[in-house]
Image (spheres, rainbow, N blue to C red):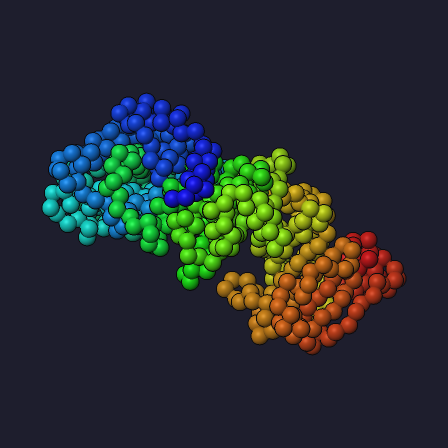
Length: 558
């Protein structure tokens, strides 16, 4: 390992002082732990410091770790953790990280109880058992089987895994797993009732006898919390075991496998710098390192990206390019990309780093956006739902925000049914514009945008005949598609070709109607331009009334 790479590794890991973390591990887990492996720094920190992870079940942890340690101590040749076993750990760990975010965000959401049960409680409970716990139990079962000369690799269902671990001393886990509840969910035997009070009914079969377990939503929440704490404890025990016996982890880091990439990602993950994924394009052209970062200082990000590129190059040195991409809750996605030759030079000579970084900037391989400093409610931004409109003559849904710093822009789908008269279609479009123009949009967490109850500067509306499962493609051959409307308060658009490929855009029939640029799929509507009407002219919307008594002053035609 060359001096520059050694320096990069030391400087990279110095961004986080692990002393306090080690002290907490010694206090809460085991005072005999003298060091923390880089592979597990982030996992330890997440479980011991962050909500909701730090509520882990201590009884489960203590027994599970003791049983795992007995595997390493009982024989002179403890079972190895090879790639197939480690893959199960990764599956459980990745799911755990994703479910943790869901629990933190959604457990306190104010929704109707039936809706919350269907959209949050049941999916989260299922994911905790099937995606997280079952994979962790597979790791324990296979390691235990290796120790006692049994092959447990075919034990795949939660019930089978529960029986295996119960028979091998993991009673704290087994006693907390309700297979009947899980089976009721998996078999679709869950009933929600609101009257006389909110209850959830789980129907299942036990010893060929049909049974039912019912509970209030808050009781189901308690089961979910307990299950989450169980999963956290099992993850922490596996992490502690692997940290204590890192030599048992047999992953060939030189191979470009999912497991070797994932192990490097874990090794590069620190509190505040979470390496979510490492992958390649499959042809040795580019290695991609995906980072979620807390510190959004652009100089810090540039420095971290350069160090990561050098570290990745010294691990996998045969790629043509190395891209370090960054995500943050308050910053737009950006990246730093270096060519192989550049990383090779930087790896050999630290003095060349500044010059090479400037060259990457010139060719636009460095994109680091400034972080947003606007005060926002991140949960509101993340889960904000635009309303739908359901009227007698038309429906609007799929409203989305496309706003910029100085322009409020909304997109939407408009459904008009089987209306075929052009004047009627235009009339409905005008009504939809009236509804959409003042629709509130939330702020953005990552960039400054024009938002709130102010009027929109632009609306992009896809007009269709019907919703349900009809095609929504903006193609000349889609008979469900009527037209694309580009409305602008200024009367002129900045959207090129309606955001579509030019070869498709040219096949539509184009027309300007007041402040609307309309691209008709059906050419029968012709190509013409409607100028601003006079006050006493008939209104272009087709109402039959004079312009001054209809759409005048509404910003549609004037």
